[in-house]
Every structure is written in structure tokens, then in C-alpha cells.
Amino acid sequence: MKSICARGASVAIVLTYLASSAWCQDTGLPSLMPFPPLPAAGNGYAVSPAAANDALWGQAEPSPVQTSPIQSPIQGPDQLPGKSILGPDYTDAMKGGYESCGSIAGPCGGSVCCHNHYIYANALLMNRLRPGGFATSFYAGNFDQAINFCNREFGRTWVGGFELGTGWCFGCTSNCALEAVYWGLYPSDESARAQGNVSSLIDFDSLDYNGGNANDAFTNAQLHLLESSYTFHSVEFNLVGNGCCGGPFGCGMCGCCSGRSGSPWGYGYTLGFRYMNFTDGFLFSADPTDTAIDGDPQELNYLGQFNNNLFGFQMGSGLSYCCCNSFTAYVIGKVGMYDNHVTGLQRVYGPASNATINNGPYQNEQAVVRTAGRETFAMSGQIDIGGRWACSECWSINGGYRVLGLSGVASTEGNFQQANFHDVDGMAFLERSGSLLLHGAYAGVTYCW
Image 1: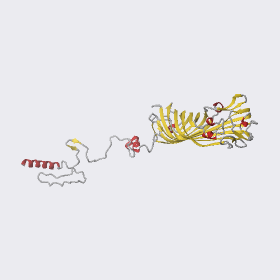
Image 2: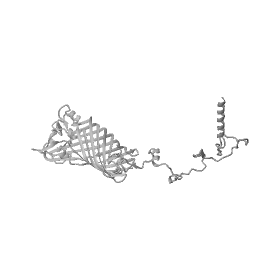
Image 3: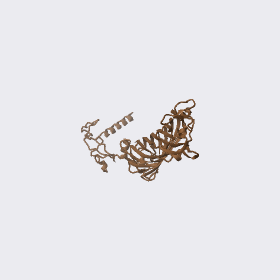
Image 4: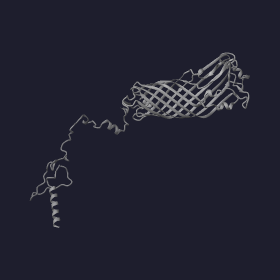
């Protein structure tokens, strides 16, 4: 028991010593546990203010009390008042890249400009390739000299049009976009004629006109005139995107192509809705008395008009190659599937009146056959091959060659009636397995901002 009491006394003495003036420092600040001064008696000493001592047991450590302002060992311009010591990369990371894009390094070298919008315009000059045809007229005793509804007669005329597109880009590198595109070709009538004692290979025997048989106007006539025309319109709403090293779509159509420090190849995709309208028509006329279609009551005409409205979706991809800093070559392919709503009109008429059917269930009815609407499945394929020259970061010049093919459409070649005009139901059904092939050049400019 005595040993335990002795040990307790020793601990008390040590604690009392540690609380002495050697360890208590008065910093001039309020203390939570103030120690009252000890009386000057016996072996005690009064506690007096002492300067803070950083030397504790011989080891120099920072004092908890700062007696002078901190001075940086190295003071640069970034530490001056009003200057931030945070780098731009840190600041951009904290902002999430939403406040400013500016010009940032591209993954393939060079720079990528953060455009947010683009618009482009192209002029079109295209031709239609007719896959088949038929003969309508021949000279008496000479079947080799005839009017042929085929590419030889009607494939030499180029049709003009234009293309407009615009889009909104998103993402700091503007690699994706929502875009709207329209392009179209406008009517250009093509015609072929034969004069002097010419007869028709089409049999109008089941029709009457102007008090006689309709064949009378087309047999041994002085003039046969065959006219053809078509129009094409396309509207697209797409989501487009480019790969990490650029591509041929959206805002990638502007600016330089990231130099040659990395891969010169780029790729992209497109996906969206597309509407196309294709109309095809013809007019076959005859005049038995003279060589001009001028409203003579003996003249007779056979008219056909077929209208295709295609609604559907398309998808595609593109590949670009950076030939140099300013010039990019590309190829873009698209395929689509559609519901084709087809309407049509076939009519035999002249200045006197419409021709009439002279036999069958529709006898004495006028030779006017309308198709209110037929549905069919259609497909499309389009390929663009071209190049783009970047004049600046905002302007570029574009040009190339385009081929578009449609299948599952009603065309003149498939619905030109050769005989049996009394078969109204057959004429109204319409042949909808035809095709369209357009090809030609385009050129224009693109602006991004």
C-alpha cells in the first residue's frame, strides 16, 4: 500500500513541474484555464510572461503563434493581388466546359473550332437514267424509225435544282448535330416528235372520240409528239455525328481538318426521318391533219401522271480523309425504308371532249381513270462522293457527285397502257414496282458560326 501511495505522489510532482513556468506560455490571448500566480514563498517561483519558445526539447518546430506575415520563398506574377494561382485546365474542369469552348486541341492534332450552327447551299445538275422503255410510233412500212420512250430519246436532258441544309451542333467539340435538309429537281420537259404519215403502236380501238374511233387520230397522222417530265423533292430531319477524329457531317464541314499530326481518317453517322416526292408524267399527242398541236378538234391526247409520296426512316455513315490542312475528301452513303402512297391519273382527251369507252362493263364511261391511293413498300439508296475546301474557320467550298436510287415506285414505264383501255380496274391498280435512278453533280458553300 505504501508503494502505491509513493508512486501516486511521484506522478503528482511530475504534473506540477510540467505546469511550471518552463511550459506555460502567455501569448497575450485569453486562456480557457488560467493559472493564478504562485506566492513567492519557500521554493516556489512566480509565473511571469515569457516569449514563445520554439525550441522544445532541442527540436525546432513551427510555432502555433504567428508573429509576422507569411512570406513566400518564391513570389511570381501569378501571386500578385488579383491574380489566380489556378491554371486554366483546373478552371475549365470546375466549370464543366459549359461557359466557353473557344478553340480546343483536336484529338488528331491542330484545333477544333466550337461552331454551334451551320447552313449550306448547293446547286444541282442531275440526270435521270431510264432503265427500260417502249416504242410509241413508227413510219408506214418502217418499224426501225420510231419514237422510243427510252434513255436514247429521253436521257440526254440534265435537270437543275438546289439543296439547302441547316443544323444546330451540340457538345464542346460540336461533333453531333440536329439538321434539316431539302433538295429538289424541277420540271424540264423532254420531247420527241415524228412527222408525216406516222402511226401509233398503241391500240386505242376500245375508245371512241369525236364521232369516230380513237385510232383514227393516231393512224397515218401528220404529227406524233411525245412529251415527258418529272420532278423530285426530298426533305430530311437527321441526327448526325462525327467520330473522335472528325467526320463529314454537321459542323465538321467547316474549319481545317486537324492537321496531319494524327490519323487523317474521320468517320460519322446519320439517322433520321425522310420524305420524298417523285412525280412522273407523259403526254402522247397526235394530229392527223397538220404538224402543230394547236387545238384542232381532230387532235387527240393520251395523258398519264403518277405521284409517289414516300414516308420513312433512313440511316447512313460517312468516311472522310484529310488530304491536307484545308482539303478533305469524303464519301457518304444512306439507305432508307418507306411507305409509298401512290396516286395516279390516266386520261384520253382532245379539244372536243374526253374519249369514251365503247365496250365492257364501263361502256359509255369517259376515259378518265383516277387512282385515289395505293400503298406499297419502297427503298432508297444514296451515295455522295466529294471534297471540301476550307477557306477559313467559318467558310468552306463543297462539291461532288451524287447518285440516288428508288425502288417500289409508280413510273411512266410501268403504267403506259398499250391496249385494253376498257380495263378500267386494271389501269387503276397501277404498277408500283418501278424504279428511279438519278445522278449528277452538286457544288456550293457552307457557313458555320
